[in-house]
Length: 253
Image (cartoon, rainbow, N blue to C red):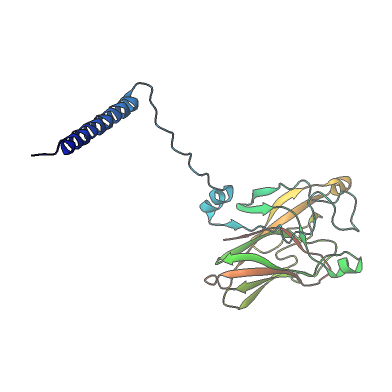
């Protein structure tokens, strides 16, 4: 004969199970009604991540403008040669990522090197700037540059690019006056003779305007002698000719 207490316990268990099933059925019904009712909208998907402007610019040409901000030693909107004329600056030059003669450069300021004549005048610029990060293999290097302050013989090296490869080896690329670069003041003379050098930008400043002159920058493509080896860093080195070389942009491809 079954114990009455056991029977009562079984009845309560059965009732509890029935209540649980009814609760689950009601929850399912409510969920379906909420989802399918008019005006219901799911949570919007997160917006896509925007790509950086440099990537969109460089992806088409496979060029990479290098950031020179850690080695800049003069400002574009101020005369940086203490012996120069008032208003002798690059204030008209566009800042930021800008295309010159088909190559994008990152323009932030001036990297000025010492020259022999500049040193005599007491201009406080370094003879070399070392350790500019590259950290990639490349076929070519593009400079947006000029020199100034004094004359140099045609073909004389005014600066060097010293490439430091990942395997510990070095290569030097000379930058020659009248071949790759000239004075940034235009005196009506022809541009440099190297076919890979172009006048990439022409402008004025207050000093040249007073004298009826203009200023200009040159874009030069230099071939990397070892394009399969990653370049870790490069140095921009003055050859200590009379002019002071400078650059405002450096891009690799």
